[in-house]
Length: 408
Image (cartoon, rainbow, N blue to C red; front, side, top):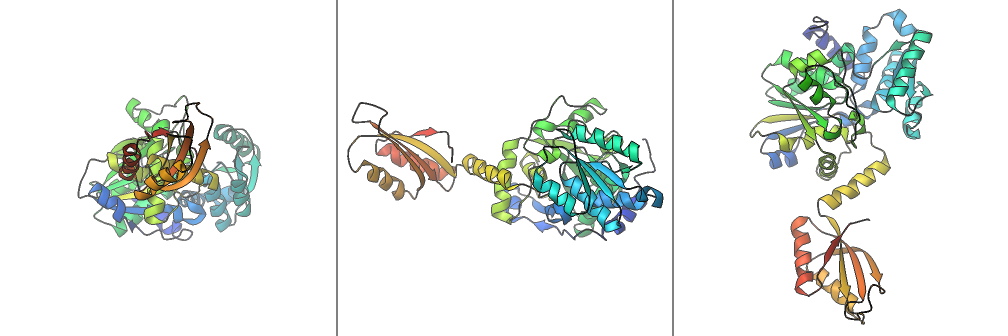
C-alpha cells in the first residue's frame, strides 16, 4: 500500500486531540424510531450539529496542524461549493492563517457569504466544482498557496476519522458504522481507524445510486470516473473518488450500499418528525441505507455527515416526502351539476377524518349534467391505510375517485 505508514493509530490519536480544540462534542443519539423499524439498536452521530454544520472542519483543522510554519504562512487554498469551503475557512480562522476558497459561480449566495463571514477570500470561477478545482490548482501554483483537498488527502482523511474514535469511545460494543461516501475521505478515515481499534467492527459505505463512483471503483479494483452523476444528494455527487485514499478504503470498507433519491426524501421527513433535526440529503444516506442492511439485534451507528440545506430545497423535499408517504394526495371526482353536491362530498370525506387542503372546481368538463362538474380535491391523510379508507368511502357513495398527480 502506498504511504503505508501515513495513516497510523498514532496519527489518528494525534488528530483526535487536535480536533477536539475546534469541534463541538456530537454525542450519539439513540433513535427509538429507527431502532424499532429495523430491529436493531440504532444510534445517530449528529455531525449536522457540528460547527459550520458538517464534519469537514475536522479534516481541515488537522491538515493545518500538520503543515510547517512556512506552508501555513503562504496561506491555504481549496475548491468547494459546500461544506468543505466553510470547514477550511473556519479551521483557518481558528489557526489565524489566510484561506482562499474557489467556488463555482453557481454557488448560492448564502454559502458564499457564510464562507466570507468566516474570514476567507472567495474567488468565484467556473460552472461546476471541477472547473473551480482546476482554478484553485492554478492559483496554488501561481501564489504558492497550500492546497487542502476536500477528500483526496491522507491528513484530511485522518482528521475525518476522529469520528470513529468518538463513536467507539462512547459505544465500545458498536457492531456496524454506516458512513456516507462522496469522494471517500470520511469513509476512508472512519473505516481505517475503526479497523485499527476493533477489526470486528463492520464499516459500510453508503452512496447515492446516481453517484456510485466508489462502488464502481471497488468493483474495478482501481479508481474509475463515472460519465455523469445525478442525485439530490449534492454533497456526495462526485464522479471520481480519491486516488491517494483509495487503497485504504478498499482494504478497510466492508461493503457499499447505494440509496435511491426517493429513499432520501422520506428519510428527511422521518428525521424531522422523529428527531426534530435538519439533515441534508447526503447526511441522510446512512439512515436511508438501514432498510437494506439485513441484520437484527446489532448496535449500529449512523454518521449524519451534515445539515446544510437551503430552505427552498427543504420545502421541496418535505412536499415530495408527504406525497410519497401518502400523507397528501389529490383525487378527481365528477359531480352532477346541481346545488348541494359539494357539501355532500365534503361530508363523506369528513366522516372518515380526511382533511381538505385545496379544492379546484371546473364546471365545464362535460355537457352531461349528471357528471358535468370535475372536482379536484387535495387531501391530507395519516398515511396509505387512511388514504385507502377515504377512497373506499368515496367509491361507496358512487363518486369513482381518480388519483391525479399532486401539485401543492
